[in-house]
Image (cartoon, rainbow, N blue to C red; front, side):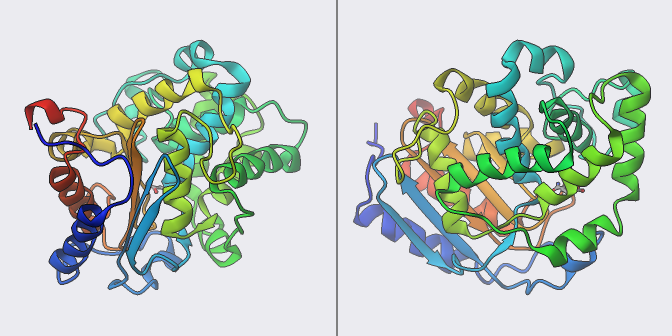
Length: 317
Ligand code: GLN
């Protein structure tokens, strides 16, 4: 069986170059447009980063371009809430099962009497934000921001233009927040929670930030660059379980089949894959498939997973 790399080497660098070359001419998919700002991001941007648990890393393409974290934020808010309330509360109040429906589905909520099923659909993500013990909106937001900054090892800005664009058009999410409230799954003021959730989605990150955030999970919750613990070691497996089951919405199964790794995507075009104990891969390319996942980002992750033998099912690859 082929060895997996555990640190940066020439084979890894070559695989990154190949992925960029092979897929930069792929023009499938479309930028998200239901958030007007996202439609204006240049579609040809493409960046790929990898970072190992020893901190060695490499990146190719547009890895310095700052994009909106969007749904990938849900992973890091989950980390914060797991540290506050623990996995049992999270599982009973939200869950870890696929809804089988798109990430903003109202039908999925209705079918399960308001139980969101997992923290990575919008309903579950807002329910997660509502579980943060906070006195007011600022306190709720500050806790989220502090956690994200610790994962990235730097202060991440909010893109106010993205926030405004999304806040002006998030009526559907507001509807979901009220539905959660009506069913007893919203644990704080619904409009405050929806607004804080919208703000968390507007955090601006580069591929380099994203790979650092991801490798912190791969490394058992310790950011390898800052050396600081960001999430309790016992809470990393629950996070990776959620990513395995629900990271790419209703096409998570397809992703797992091809890549074999816990992942998470966002409609800003970012995508993250975590190889526990080894490394993380982050990619950014704005055009999305119908489920809302970056087309080139998925292809890049698949290429790296196959070439470097990173799949968790690698013994059978
Ligand atoms: N902010 C987006 C929303 O709530 C995030 C969705 C996503 O990235 N899938 O609709």
